[in-house]
Image (cartoon, rainbow, N blue to C red; front, side, top):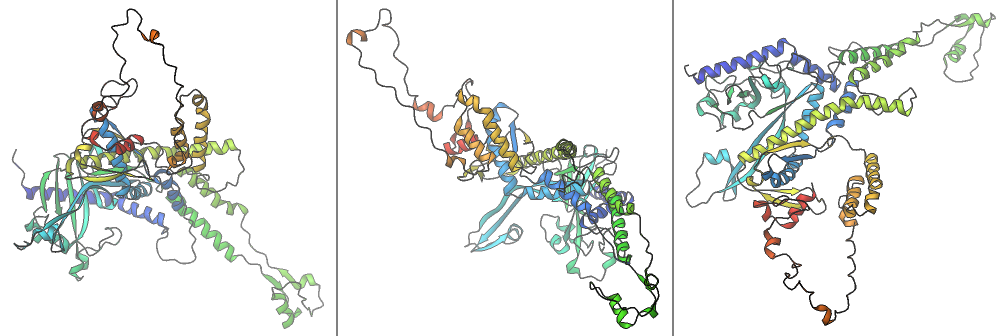
Length: 620
């Protein structure tokens, strides 16, 4: 089979991207996503207003009820070794990944992707490795790109400073992701691509791109944000715009079938900005998709708002009609004009209480002033709003208890518990999906560090917040194969009253074991103070238990009794009460029932200071 040229590959890949764009437009995915975003942000009316309109944004309430329930907490990532020899490294790796997740802003980016997951039905997360270095000459710093094009003087010594050398996680805009239109899930997709809109002048000087391809770059548009369906201004529509504000679309394309990646522009001639190379990451492409409600036979899932969209519009229309009816309803009175003078008419129209109205006519007062008949809508009309809201709660699965509102119908505690449990079933399903996604992202971050980490890094061990311990490590500390899980419920909001109640119940349950001497009471006290009451340094509340009193010394044995009985003259002397120094310094620490080598920290981990080993083991 003849080798395909790069120009043919580029033409093929651009054809795939165009096909994916037409497919998304034909299936109305872009329009649907933009409509759902507007539904969430309260832009639910289309066209110019012809009168007063009312909006009750139940969609906003639904999303912001579910989002904190599944991703408000910082996850506790557990790392388990796949082989016995990686047990010590799993302890270090667990502390590192939990520190990275908070310190490098992974939680913030992941929460943004969860909002996409709830509103649109899917969200995208990208993991990668960021290495940034700068050259410093005579207190003048140059970035890596600038330093590459300049040569320092012979008598000046240049210093290279590494600014960043770490893995990263970021949220990707769903509008910027393109996927094989023939795929029904991530497993059968043949290619995936990310579009990035860059200023044209920045792309032309980026030395990571091929020099000849950079010269052929041309504008794709003159707006950074937006898409073709939300007012994105193309180059053809803006031929008179300022060229300094021009942007070009750069595609990062991953061919999953061949295991290659490349970078190209949609308007950059017939050359790749980065020619096809083998995928740089051992786990393949760097994208992870959070999927909400699966639709059989379709790639894109459904979100929370797609099913309640028509009900949201109906609720707005109903409430607007109710508001207009209230405005139109005003009581009118019919009166005989000749029966009142000016003073009488002013008194009749006055809103003051107990006003005397003079009547000039001698006719029967019942015939002088009568109320004008008013059209009253039936009471059922005002119940439509409640019916629609009940339908929204039924479709979305978010009950009034989850929204924090007080139900109008009085229910027993058992009924309320059943309703809450039924509503929590969907939240539990989403929690599992979120926890699995976090575990996969954590695995990718560690694999990236194993592959690309060059020097040493320092992390803070999260075992003791009052007295943190810092660990300096390199890639050898985290080398190995691990399984990643997220502690169940760690991303959900914590109920302080529930935590305290559970901690106190544990104390009550452990009381019989404590009386039998089977419980480590200081550890139990630390758990109750730390987990149950949120004390950051529970050890400061505790003191060491008093040392046991030494038994009284026995009186000296008489010389005649000190002699050994017959037959015991050849017995060996007593065992030494102190261990040899070599065993304490370098030998493994074994627990009861452990085989030699179990529970030890061999290799480079043994050389860690004792306080770091204690902090690592104490966090397990």
